[in-house]
Image (cartoon, rainbow, N blue to C red):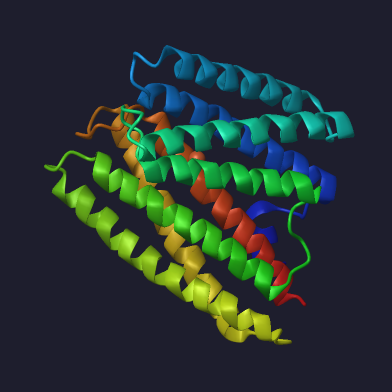
Length: 267
Ligand SMILES: [Fe+2]
Ligand SMILES: [Fe+2]
């Protein structure tokens, strides 16, 4: 039994996997729309209305995805269209933020971060099915994507915690440093894969390290979420849901990287 199978059961087939991916990301998109709403200045009523419309649209798609057993061409088109329009909206907000035409509590890097996540989802929809081929390059590219996301989650959390939360900030800083180091290595290894080696044992060893670090990051977020629900954290985190959101993304990273590792290891 492979690592992936022992952790998450048997491999679903292509369409099943796309459905699973769409269900995951549509919920994430809906929550991005909710977080944007919370971060926009109260006077920007038109932008808030647009964010609400995206939240409603992704909620509707979430309900549809719950009821289907596979994604037909029409639904696929609808998903792509919604994600493309959401990417444009997020970019519009980021542009306004960079040009100092938008106030509120949305970090520019956060807007960029959630745009990259939407692009990741759009790429999966356009491929028709998730990465399954098991090439070293696909593995390193996924690692670069997810390690950057994990590093930024920790950076956002560090900025949102109250300065008096020194222990939590310290833990987050340490995890962020480890993640940043792994990201740098992942970029190096990604470049090394261009020589198209037949075997790459060092990459497999490195991937185990990536998985254990992301597991620690996931556990840190899960603990943070529990503490936030109990009102035991001092912070300006707008809602505990944000911590649950980033925890689910860490679990997704573990799933995707493990699946690709298992594919490449059995080449
Ligand atoms: Fe997200
Ligand atoms: Fe994220």
